[in-house]
Length: 426
Image 1 (tube, helix red, strand yellow):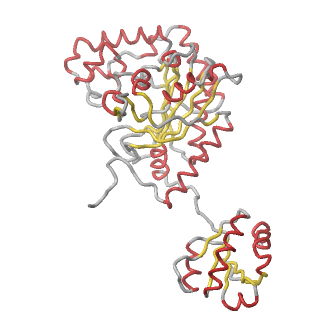
Image 2 (cartoon, rainbow, N blue to C red):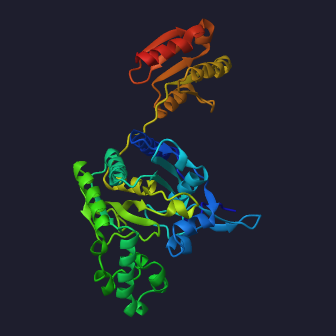
Image 3 (tube, helix red, strand yellow):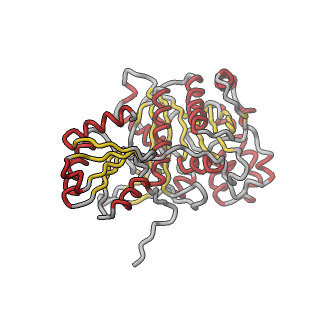
């Protein structure tokens, strides 16, 4: 039987893993600079965590979640996104009572959605995201947007576009929903079944429809900015003013609504404008949510966050021809000839590794010339050569791989002496 990987997932092989580590390291570094702490939540949760938070009218809940019953008959789902689990953990562990407020978290981990695989989009994908809970200050909206934008800039991307909009407060969003219902209802029969089902429950989701996106009513639909009350307008203006101060370019997109049920006020996306990147240009999305903490039994606490796909980031790096240095280097490769030398190399290898050095040796019983080629393939700085002659004289022949320069070091102090050589760059 030929066993193959399931559709929509991928193997990340050793030669690719270095890039992933570099990206994850950069994400962690920038989050720590901004004062965000790592949180790790389970890969599966009760299905209700997502149906109550993401919204039971969304494609994620209706079509894309991997949901199953456990042996106790409980309905569980592989997490399709990161915000709901973070908020659930925040409430369950009473982090709203923690002395450091707002609570600022970041996460990096796999998510799962059953959707059609395409370039840069998988059924198992890795998301990097942040959540800031506890503050309704527009300045933290600007901080979250700045963090996401700065992350892409520091990864080297240049073809970026930040689109931003406001959904307003509860009152403004309600007025906008009513306007959308009035706009679409007379001709809703011309739309797909999903749009018809969403008209009363969540008409904002109609604006995200891929099937009917070219319908004339879409272009003529009401604009949310026309329905913002005074307080919501003031909030949005402050966010934009802070972005101006941070010199982060943006475009106001009144059609950017992000139909997830918990969004209010600020909503944003960062897209790639690189020609030829593909039909799906979105790299990152986020926004402010009010009421989600209460959905999980917590106090009335606002939040804002974003999530981005690592796979989409890698695709955008490739599109812009950006290469992240990930070349691995071994400090020393032990080359042996003869049984006595091979036996000794086992102990020497352990001594070197215990000093924190990257060391390896041949396990394929190859000739010395082939072992030196193996050292070269591993990008080793040095080769420690031990043959019958060296065993008799109790020395190790140390060769610098790039110059061929050699010197002998007594076996009794080789590990410590070599540590000094590497530390001093000799």
